[in-house]
Length: 149
Image 1 (cartoon, one colour):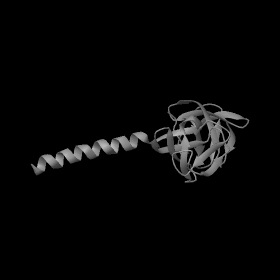
Image 2 (cartoon, helix red, strand yellow; image 1 turned 30 degrees about the vertical axis):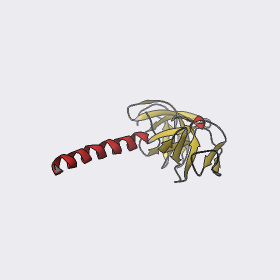
Image 3 (cartoon, rainbow, N blue to C red; image 1 turned 60 degrees about the vertical axis):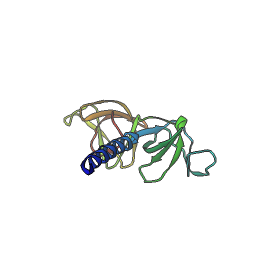
Image 4 (cartoon, rainbow, N blue to C red; image 1 turned 30 degrees about the horizontal axis):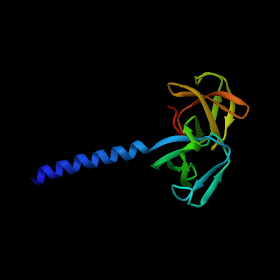
């Protein structure tokens, strides 16, 4: 009897941990001005205002139409789902080189600083075609914050 109860509890805990990790994913801010709140609702006060379209965030929880997100700088809060979209960008977490083609032997033509926001056009193998300000090229997907899928 105790053995059956232990197996049942183990299966239930595995299902619970899978549902938690299913909520975690990368998203991007949809608007130039996004309010981040202390809680999941309009009754909660505004904690931060982010003014960066396409900024990458990581969803860690959801409650009805609200998503709890974490930014690269570890700020967190709640954003209404209408202000978010599937991730289309990444942030460099170390200095990167922008190449003309997806190859180490291609011509490098720009150095990207740590913390640069890059909008993804497409990805192939370990490379992504990105744009940032006036640059368009390819980077390796190593040491970036965000999802390339």
